[in-house]
Length: 393
Image 1 (cartoon, one colour):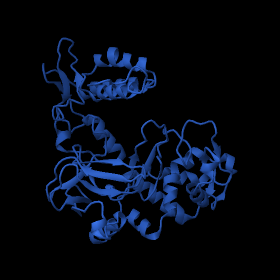
Image 2 (image 1 turned 90 degrees about the horizontal axis):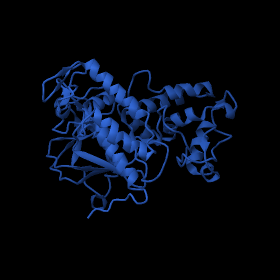
Image 3 (image 1 turned 90 degrees about the vertical axis):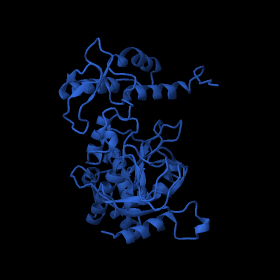
Image 4 (image 1 turned 45 degrees about the horizontal axis):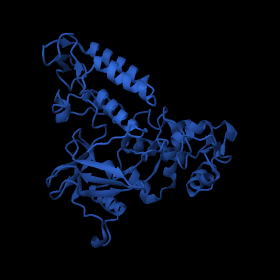
């Protein structure tokens, strides 16, 4: 394991902070230290103003997300909607055009995969599995220093991580050293990778990137930073509020507008911990009521909230009439709401608006994260339709 001094040197080299300070886009007002949350984190060395750029990170590796339910597309340009998809006859990766096939990106990917001996014909290779494993495969292109940087990051150890790499062995004879590095890369990616936002108006395959400096930021449900991406896939991390010297710098691993149960379940499933921050401990979530449900008593206008939010088995109580509802009943309703949302055609605006106006608000208050999400989706979709644009003054 790298010492903090060694890791700091790698971080500064990665960010290009070892050169002329006058040419830098920003100065590092933070250091790497042991975090009271466990592991390491970034801490402010001097006061940081709201809106100030903390650092500009770039990915060690990037590529398609690995989830089994993610739509697959061209492994170079990530396009989804085309009838011209074909498999490379050397590596079996999915492509959409000759220009993508002739690109340097595909040359690198193809060079790795085609060096492995095929156990089956290229037509029989599962292109979907290859796409899921591709980001981990690209770890083989890293130089030794980059590999050392990657291996210094936290990695998940549960057996489900790295499955997509292990399954490649049914199609290829892969050197054991390559297998081990790709499995490690997959475990590091699952612990640290960030989903890369799709450009506005584009429909593309989901992508992720291993941003090593951002990976050092610990989680808080009320983070003091935000990030966005530029056209070069660089991640620009800024403060969203003043950060005092000595304070830890946080990001958020979940959706900010998710209610506490949704955030905690997501963190437990994907990051293997349960958050206990102040927001999670507050039943009202600072008065936002994002997880609230309507009281089961038809006459009562109140909202149901968990009595002990940090306990997944907690009963819920109405803040108006005091009605207590067992956790099992709450889980049943939440599951039914999830099924309803899952059955929606989000491209059908009439269906979406009808669901929002006539159905979902019968069961949940307008503060609930589902209603907030539907409002955002409607605004997004209607804002791009003829005669439905906003004309605010």
